[in-house]
Amino acid sequence: MNKISLSDGEWKLMNLLWEESPLTIKNMVEALKDDTGWTKATINIMLNRLSEKGAVRIDTSWVRKQFYPILEREAAVRQEARNTLTKIKASGLGLLVNTMAKESDLSDEEIDELYRILKEGREEE
Image 1: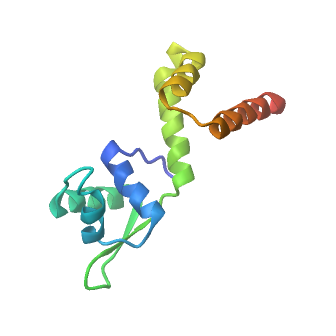
Image 2: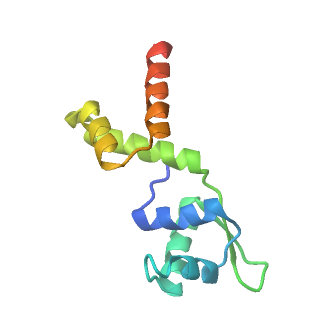
């Protein structure tokens, strides 16, 4: 799949679509009204951009357009992680993990998962 970079706003829309689809623009306006206050026009522009990027499919066979995610969440997260690591590589991975642990309020389960992932990474070398 092509590398698709998402803006912060596009992530909001994609997260909605990954949680439930299809959705209409009206559904998305309602879901995001408290968080963003975006209008139908704003969301429509963003969805068209996501469609052009190959992240969203628009079904026009209904009275109201229906939107489906094409881009898989896992692929988007992997790409975002690669982009982030590339940007901050010079600062060091330790700083990234330290900041993530301190600033993200990770649960015990998430910390255990991080340990497991790091251990598996070492074993694969």
